[in-house]
Image (cartoon, rainbow, N blue to C red; front, side, top):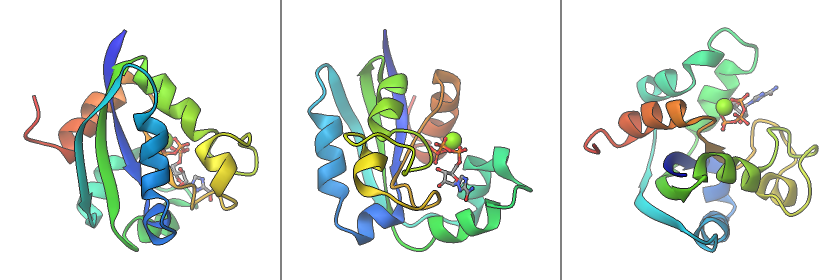
Length: 137
Ligand code: RTP
Ligand code: MG
């Protein structure tokens, strides 16, 4: 099924020079297309909306600080089963639990600094696309 997802390459990916590597993995998947791509530094308001479900959790404030610690790359990726597919490429939240071959499994060690965000459902994707790319239909 063709769908779209919102991907963020987090500040650690930018700091460590892994933007090209991660985009390359997404780009090489068959039948997927990057339809928006922008480097930007996020403000607290955008992040509050994006990570609102985690407000009040112990990791929320450190997460907010980390996500504002440098630029992120925001992308829309469209294609066949892309919501589930990018989550699979990313691997589980905890990079140590993530299998080698996944982005988090290959490059991460710290739960917070896990390199990539990808929408967790088509409904989240629609909300997040509107938040990060408000001009999009
Ligand atoms: P994301 O939303 O960023 O795509 O990641 P996710 O679905 O795999 O994980 P989620 O549970 O939504 O958590 C959001 C982000 O918060 C940071 N985190 N830190 N225990 C911790 O220190 C902790 N737990 C989560 C991670 O950056 C995670 O991706
Ligand atoms: Mg999440």
